[in-house]
Image 1 (tube, rainbow, N blue to C red):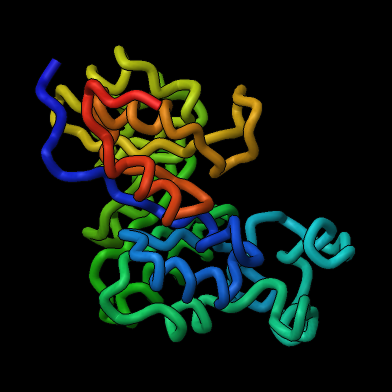
Image 2 (image 1 turned 90 degrees about the vertical axis):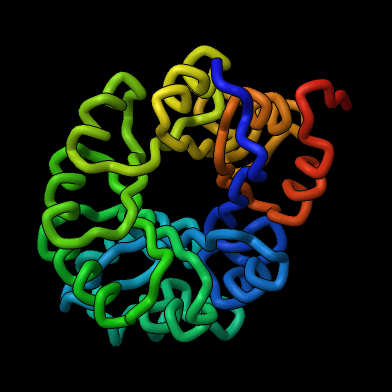
Length: 249
């Protein structure tokens, strides 16, 4: 196994600084920047009239008690649905206006219809920003987006076994769930020169998605993980400040 990189892992603010603010909200995005997150993640969906918005769930039931799918709601109607005075699903334009021009952004594309992908890539290009990462869930969408842009692609694949096909299709960074991020798999992937970001919590752990255990974070860093998706970027940075192979709780 190669020696761990001397560069610290990237801290990706999962849905913004979502441990302290409502997920996918301007407040969460601004706080993530102030906390020094390397990357701010936002979930992307599309309204019935083709406007890109930031929301994790397919509907607003959890966030605002409305069961209609976002894909069936117009942008104007959606903008009128607010929580604490802010749109429950802010537009991509609001995201880009909120974050500084130099801030890296991860788009977790929840709705991977080709027309949404085309609109998102076009908007990313028009923004003139660098450091944009497209998080995609299938090999077909990886191939679709790779044909449109040279921006980095994060593979949010259902099965780690697809890793070779993902990189062959033009992917750049493999995402692993924490429970899949074993020492053996991290070593195998990073040993071939590929970066790996890990989403902490959920998926077989006893923690919510984005929540982390400091010891596990340090172990995965020692094993080669190059980034972490976490809800609290400040606490994650503090945990990793002693991220040495011999670190203990």
